[in-house]
Length: 120
Image 1 (tube, rainbow, N blue to C red):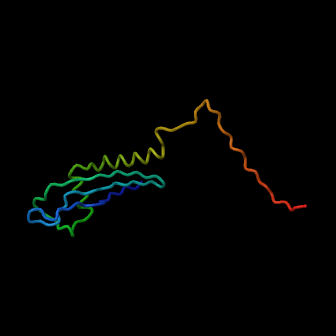
Image 2 (cartoon, rainbow, N blue to C red):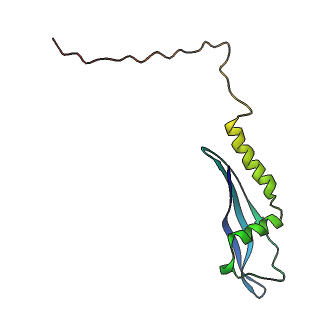
Image 3 (cartoon, helix red, strand yellow):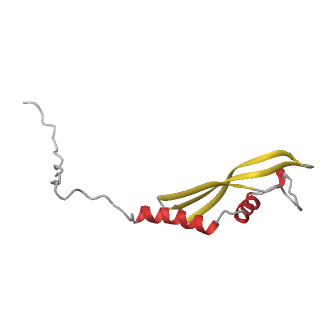
């Protein structure tokens, strides 16, 4: 199974005190895939105005912003577990629909092969 975290969008305040282009919210997504199955979770994470070290917007990395999300309430382990469970439930569904036992099953007729015969 492959789990991939991505930042889809950043909301930015053009000015915050003496700083410019300050990220205030990140929209994230966690995707999981396993052959033909997939699962996803997404959300947003907001941040307090920066104090101390400030990284200019153009120098930000996706990894850095994801780190901010994890440090501000995005529970990485719980979300990855949710995505994994979505995939496991597709592979082994916990609930299924069976045919009603009192309704007779419909038999599918065997295909009929018609051969072209020359006209007499």
